[in-house]
Image (cartoon, rainbow, N blue to C red; front, side, top):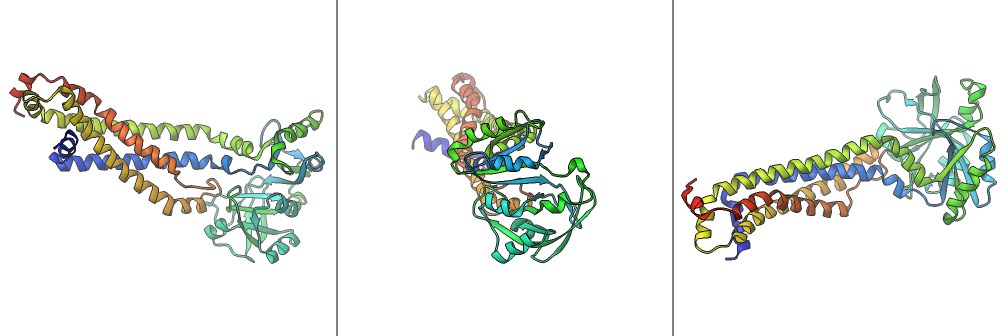
Length: 390
């Protein structure tokens, strides 16, 4: 019999309470890890961004447009290989208005050259290029809303009013996670030549993406692009694709901070639950601890019993909490969120590092929660403790 085995055996003294406490730890760790996964997955677009692409937008704000002639100017910058341009359309799919997904106007040929990770069957690609009212749909979006090649759809305009009939000419997949599979792309000419657009809105693009020859030249190329437009009526702000994704994510910074705060509040609640449980157990064993002190056990031994019991509860609860959360996210929930989040989450998976961190946090918080009860146990007066019956 060792001090460690005594501490472990103490867990079974009130099994019902111990099980409830462990369940509390399990639920708390699952909630904590899920929230951390939301934050890390939300920011994954920055990590997964292509290193050989740079983006150019209006210097003031993302929602202001650039003259389309800027596309050719960017293409002429030394080091730029291919250029594509985009306009956020922001329409809703008729009959599926509650489903959010990105839909953008672009030049199909240059788009597929710049985003070479997009894979489209050759016959579908040919049909999309030929049909000005054709749409290219991501496989995740097609699955979510039930679309197939050849379907006739109507996009209900919001930024650009009216009904916009289209034909699904292709469904794409990707070879990398640098772009989502939940977006609808259609011809810029279809948008630009529509009578809905008045002259000030015609021949305008939302942003420009350039594929560069050498990823190491990204910083110098962005500087050259912005310097070229410094004396124009409309100035630009150029950045790497990762920085562009980060600037978009910054619009949700307040929400991410709130989620981050809630995740740590959960840890505090878990610590309070554990602390209360350990304190109750310590009070119930006051007489027993008095006997142990009387027969020669040192104060540090009593503190070890309390800390050991709490650490085991935290460790076991943490193991189950991490295991359940990891399995739930990486073997079910993650894929469903990726397919149904409208491209908000390119990759929703729990990192192994987060799982390990969660296990250490559960154990550490359990030990921290037991610090005060352990200290009080070590300071018990032997005579007073022996007098206490219950």
